[in-house]
Image (cartoon, rainbow, N blue to C red; front, side, top):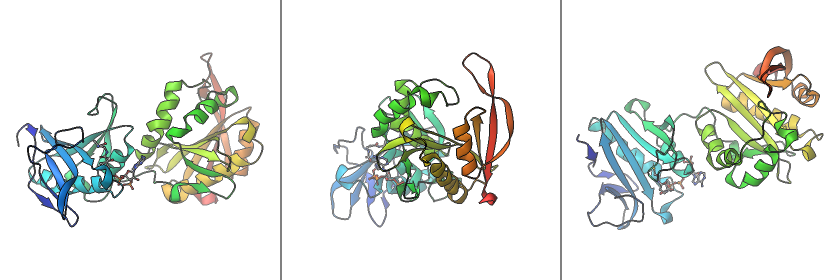
Length: 328
Ligand SMILES: CC(C)(COP(=O)(O)OP(=O)(O)OC[C@H]1O[C@@H](n2cnc3c(N)ncnc32)[C@H](O)[C@@H]1OP(=O)(O)O)[C@@H](O)C(=O)NCCC(=O)NCCS
């Protein structure tokens, strides 16, 4: 292998053929297409890739023609070239996907790339922040393991409340909610978030933290729209534990929604995520939150002395609660 542009032999799958692109091939893909994918009838390319090699790592940019999207072709193209890439001695096959390009990130993960390089500031091909994903020969052929699976059918619901992922179009609701003193005063840091933090969270951070298995942030909807959030945080699969946290807007309180949401998330955590212990911390004075946990089957385990910081630099005590999978 030598530094620079990297080509593989022609690869033929049951759906398409990937081969070196003609020098005069022009595509609106944002990069010089070194490799193009063609369907059975040839014609216009279905997709394209550019591979570069440096120090035993091959990096990929990939693109699917807009009219061919929605059929997981991006993942199939990456998977098809992985064998030839490793056969030539590469130690690592990687891609840096812009954090806002969820289709690219999910495609890479479906092809087995794991989000092992974290958020790389300015690391994407367009200068935006990237998620670095890598594939190693020993990972095998399946998709990347997911500590936090997608919600079944896209939501958790008990018929009264439904929980779904946070989306870019939640920005205004999420900002209004999180900037409200009666919501952030109950948060761990008791500070309003910045507009930029909320925008990042809605546009990409919540989705990426879910894909990376770090936290699952969900919107609580009672059929009238955004009413608050609930999340499973600090997911530690090795020891089988996770933390739960939630907040409802003032108008949605007192209706039992939080208890329903906690029950839904705990059932999902025990049955689909596979943790055995979900814990929560409440302020010692937060009677409403304590009642939610008690109703949802959590037991009070004790006082965490100085469990959380306060704005004046001292620490406040919190109550520690937990529910175990064997309780249910
Ligand atoms: C990235 C790209 C190649 C994927 O094309 P594709 O293979 O047709 O992708 P699909 O539409 O089948 O979607 C792939 C996955 O993303 C998901 N997805 C698609 N659009 C999405 C969106 N707007 N938000 C969240 N997820 C999305 C799909 O549900 C699917 O998920 P799954 O595999 O976990 O089921 C294509 O979108 C593209 O060419 N984008 C522009 C170039 C680019 O971003 N390249 C990557 C550079 S590193």
